[in-house]
Length: 242
Image 1 (tube, rainbow, N blue to C red):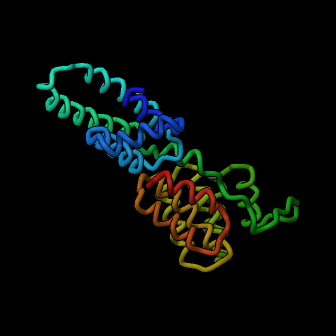
Image 2 (image 1 turned 180 degrees about the vertical axis):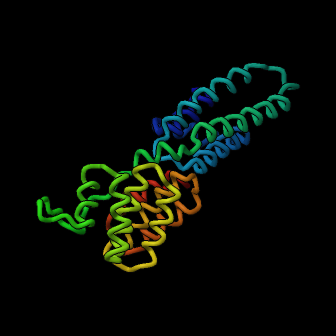
C-alpha cells in the first residue's frame, strides 16, 4: 500500500493489522513519513473537533495532491518537493481552520431558548390583574415586548430580584442582547434561586454580542457552580468555542 493511503487509513482508524505494522515501520524508519504524520497529528489536535469527518475529507484530498507530485523520479527534485509539500500543509491548515470558524449567530440560535417560568404560578382570573401576573402571562404567550415592560414595572413595585431574570430573557428573545446583558448583570447583584442560571443566559447574551471571552467566562462560572441546569449544554458550547 502506498504511503498516502496508509496515512489516510491511520487517521480514519481503518488500518488492518498488517497495514499497522507497515505504518509503524515507516514511521520509525522514514523521516519524511514521520514528519508528515506528526504534522497532521498536531493539526488534528489543535482543531479539537468532536466530528472529524471534515478533517478526513480534507486529508484525503491533501494526500492525493501530495502523492501526485511524488511520482517524479529525479532526485534533484527532492528538496523543492519537500518545500512544496510544506506549503501545501500550511495551506491545508489555514483552509481547514478557516472553514471551522465560529458562527456566533448560529450557535446562539442552536442553544437559546427562553427560560420557563419556574417562579410564579400564573393566575388567569378576572379578579387577578396585578402587574407581575400580567407580565408572566405575556411571557408565557411569547409577547416579549409587553412582558419586558411589565416585568420592569413589577420589579419597581415589588423589588423581587427574580423578575430581572425573566426580563433579561424577554430582552434576549427580542434580540436586544446589550440590554439583556445589563439586566442579567443587575440580577447577579442579588442571590436568589435563579442566580446561577443567569450565568447561562448571560453567556448566550455575550455570544449574541460576539464577545467570546465573556461567553466562556460565564459558562465556566456555571460549570463550577452546584447548578445542574443547562450544565451539559454549557459544557458542549464551551468545547465548541475553544
